[in-house]
Amino acid sequence: MTKFDIQTLLIESFEDYKLDNTERRALADKLATAELKADDLSYLRNQSFSLVQQIIRESGDALQALKWLEQVIKQLDKARGSDGEVLAESWFSPGNSCVNGIRHQLKRAVKSVDICVFTIADDDLTEAILATHKRGVKVRIITDNDKINDVGSDIDYLARQGIEIKLDNTSYHMHHKFALFDGERLINGSFNWTRSASKYNSEDITLTDDGRHVQAFSRHFEQLWHYFPNYSH
Image (cartoon, rainbow, N blue to C red; front, side, top):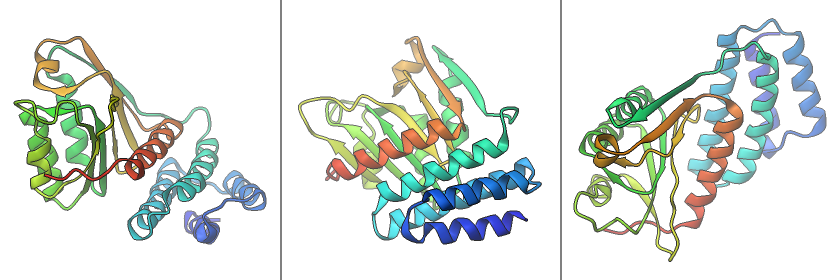
């Protein structure tokens, strides 16, 4: 049983966007008996994300597809085992470590970047986001309307460059500060994406590729993306 055999099994199970009990047991059995390396499991994980991303782009049926993905990732994580290495890095401000960590992930992204932050007001981050967009990576941003007209806000600028943006225009606040890269890595923490956060504030962000957290945040991002209206500049 190779990774390609398991990939075929995943593709077949994805036809109805459901991983039923029979399919889940079959997948678990195949993963348990197959002699797969960590790279093989990463390949299967990436292919699973690609299936879901294609459906989201074509039909917008995101929530059911993400439920399927969540079940698949659980099985792949089990196959990786408790000794599998999980990416976990943390950075703090004041200082440039938070910004540098975000910029590095933007440069690494090859398929998609989903950003969900209260505001963006840092030229270094803005230029890194724009450079990612210009490389052909699909960039989506969800933000709040509270700071949209403040001096230094880069949201309108990014929208005018062709980046898709959704805006929370309610009387409440969309106060998240997280981003997803290729549907595989998550950055999350208190760090505001602003210059003042780097220069003055005590903030933090953590990077992880733990599938449990990545999927939870991916699912929430899609919910917000479908709920909030498009930003019109």
